[in-house]
Image (cartoon, rainbow, N blue to C red):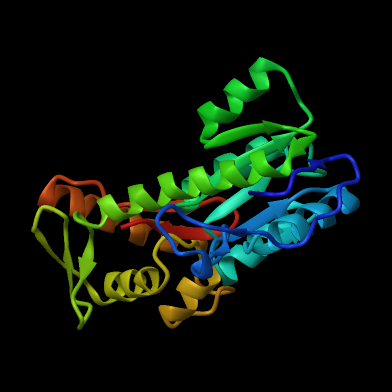
Length: 257
């Protein structure tokens, strides 16, 4: 069983505890969070450290940040499966972070906040949160919630793989989920190949401009926007489906096949 302790009141993580899944032999136990990547955004330095230690002790791969800017920069380099998010952050608040990330990528989000009002919970869930926990939170409840959200998000990802957008090996043809074929121009091919390198992860505008062979100083933003707008319209006209290529404000674009 998991160790208990209230996170949010000077809790120190206990020793790692192996969790045995039903049907496993005793010698095959492993930590319950093994292999699951979690980002934490919490501006309280002590609590952020406690959360990082506690979740790491249960096998989670944890990266922790005090504010949203650090989170965005990290996610551009390496995506995460889960996010543990405080609402009362300096600068950009948790609701804004939640809304932006849910538009940009597939990630399970658990809110962990001292705010107890029903309106806050409802607003968070309507914005896209997968769960809402009130501080101080027991470690057992936190871990169980993260595991539950991970299962739901992973299950949705597995079922959605049956109908996906695919690009040819040579990059000149985009295959829609219904089997329609969309021929690509050289510029469209360059953009889509860049997006397929890291599906579900935002690609920076400057990187797309560089892939097109231009300098960001010379290549105006609206030219990239027009290129992507024309591609979306072409896809819609040829197959009737919406191309899941979306703008991420202040960052670039994300493709979620």
